[in-house]
Image 1 (cartoon, rainbow, N blue to C red):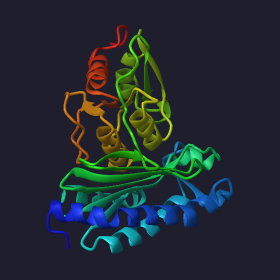
Image 2 (cartoon, helix red, strand yellow; image 1 turned 135 degrees about the vertical axis):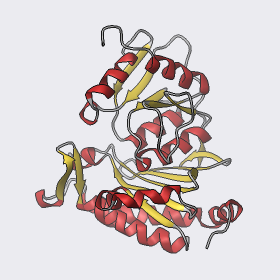
Image 3 (cartoon, helix red, strand yellow; image 1 turned 120 degrees about the vertical axis):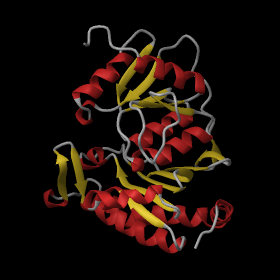
Length: 285
């Protein structure tokens, strides 16, 4: 049983490679054999036609739940599909035990349509603090990792987000319209203004990776599900970026955030996006 954060640090020193191997093996065994090979009966809807789940999601999460639990005795797993089946599972994020936060296929819609823009996300957290993360994009064969205080890396190369180039429109990926309420759409409309080039997001995990690489200036999201955000937020932080909610506070994976929120390449950009999100769109009452 893990007793304190120092012990988790020791675990990560010894076993980060084992976590990476477990992620790669889960993807190789359960996700990639189904990529562009899904039968109709292997795809289901959850809350609606834009909220999909596949056999790849379910089976990869089962694989990771078993593998990660064995690697770190005393830990628990909070996975997207397990929470859908039993929402009470989500409460473990606020507990004392180390928790693995898993999104087996981030970008399921892209996966279902045969698009390469999906990834597998794993984060290790304790008491609401994300300590390490793994973002694996199998079609691109890219693996991004981060350890709190230890930096962010993509395939072994250190990531530095850096500030946006001066004088250029801010490139911001926002919550996709298919996944937003009317109220959320109105809040995000404030980004459609001079000096900003917004677009709908794809896989959240890959958008966070783009911010950490300095390819995207910021994201602006309107939902809290920890499996979508935990891994990417740490990746952005460790690459030198920042994240802020509408209240100007860092995003909390335990919930209760004032939404929307942003993660950006640097603190100044994060503040700028929050300022814009705080301004009512001129002709929206």
